[in-house]
Length: 83
Image 1 (spheres, rainbow, N blue to C red):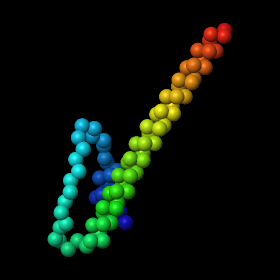
Image 2 (image 1 turned 180 degrees about the vertical axis):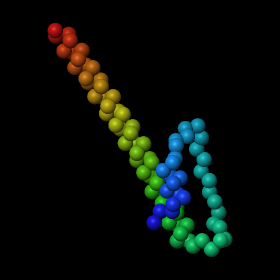
Image 3 (image 1 turned 90 degrees about the horizontal axis):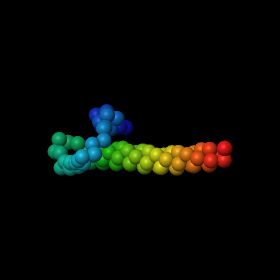
């Protein structure tokens, strides 16, 4: 079960490159069970892992595309020098 407010926050996240802030909140005394807090923490960790994985995939894709563009440029240069 994903908490609706947490899902909305993750879906609307925009990267902020100038600062990173991690806030830690103490356990509240409002009767929130330990299991619910752990579940929320687990969901946060999974969401963070997904974001990191997507960023890694983007970077790998960009490197691969750059290599393909270089290879294509070299092939064009070699073909035009033969003509």
